[in-house]
Picture (tube, helix red, strand yellow):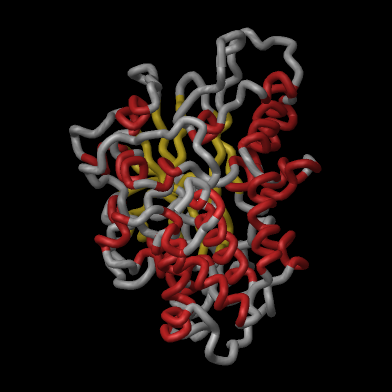
Length: 208
Length: 219
């Protein structure tokens, strides 16, 4: 067998059992006329290109810049975001929760993996895994330590367990030293984790 | 059901380990599983609550040792078999052998892709006035249904306060079992950390769940 064989010939011996089973299922669904493989490709492409934390970052940056938008966002997240053409796919039931000097918010789904896909993209593995799901509601400060995040001792910590079709997005506090920044500049500071509540926005001027 | 999926408050799973620069999918097959679940759901083979229920009913050792998309795959395959969309013989053969079962919304083709990228609507007209108002003290019922529920174990029996009213939504407990949507009022109910976890709990912690009205009693 040449060295190139491995790279170019994906015969079955190189596929895992799971890969084989997944392929078989797709073959059956296609042969039965339930799905069109090109439509599956298009779904994957849409997830890979259209959704992601940049959507949430735009919303946060606008809320930092526009007090009227922020007020509307906190009153009805879905409705406020629906007015922004480029991120209008959010659907119903998005609740935006604001971090303040007195309160830090953190979002979890202890029962499965509920997450605001349209705002943040597909969730990372850790969000869907047992360590986070089990501990976020009982020892959130311990969980935050795993992210190297420390909160002031007296700060209230509020954990939102996404047990229904409501979805939660954290509005982090605007970093100091960003006076006069444009929404585009601000959006660059907004991290995915800061909108889950397991991190903070980037510090202006700090190396990324 | 009191399954291992209901993880809130369990100990022993270790540290959270974020992966730097995590890819959207770790294996190509994961993306195919995601797409098949979205497509077959949109075609009407099952609703979101039923798909969750099938993942929850995986044997506990399988649930805990399978990756996320592996659980999705195992749940999808079993659900499609039990709902009559394919047979175990077809799965074993890797090919269709039986006539197809009609899908409620027809074949999932390219024209349907845009539809799955917009979140579904779960709000429904209210069949009755809300029983609770914001600020009410409520007790999460001590119930242990063997079927699907969205009332996590760690709040059962505990008293919290109604903080938000989200209107009436599809009731997962019946929808998952294909016994109808039976819309119910949905509230955010907030609990004190120490009420849930005792005197050793974090005194600065408050935890909320979104609770359907049938999960709650006045307190």
